[in-house]
Image 1 (cartoon, one colour):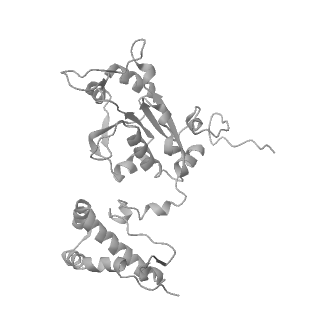
Image 2 (tube, one colour):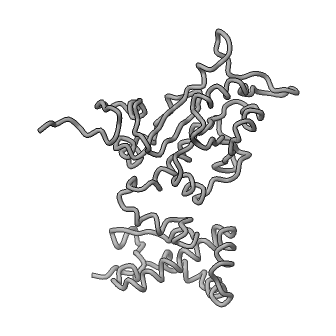
Image 3 (cartoon, rainbow, N blue to C red):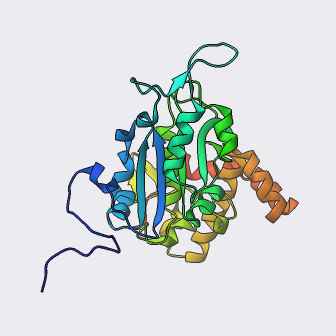
Length: 289
């Protein structure tokens, strides 16, 4: 019997311990694919080559391909940018250069530009992307990308937060990580997705607090209900805490949840119990023996 490793549907396979080799062609036919157009292809896979996402990459559950923007540059120095029209500081990535890179990427996947002016990235958008064939991500640099090429390719702009990075590579890894973990079989326990923050199965609430051993640490005890063995009481406590944390920390999420699920009496109960929600943190109890 041969000891040769299985190909997992690849055209061929070669063993390697180098992270960059995780992205080497040929890749798995039909697997969810992330393509990244970047001036720094060496930034990938980065953290995506580690832990669960890295293991899923080696197992062929998803593909990662970086497309170096520099070879599509103009002239002897392969220039990819030029001064902004109308004047101003910085440089702008040329439309012809980006167009050539996007044509190399192909038209089979939706194209996303990581931009602080884009729509906020959400768990719901991650789920939508995970259900598709993949995505092509544009990592901007300098002052951004010429608007004409974004319009020509129908590019979607997405922001990971209200701040500015030096480039889109970190944002691209955030987008990929949040999406890949939703692909079936990437996480060892898919049930863990149900109670996460923003999960539809969790009502869009933030996740409840988590605890583990030891039962008493630095004078702080695990809430007694979690040690009771009463699964119904534990479930109720976790749900109540998720509601309280969401109301305190994310009023925007709470308003949406309140419209869909809450009644005024329960809302008043949560408001009046805010002091009780702190009791388990401030008044430690002796653990059960």
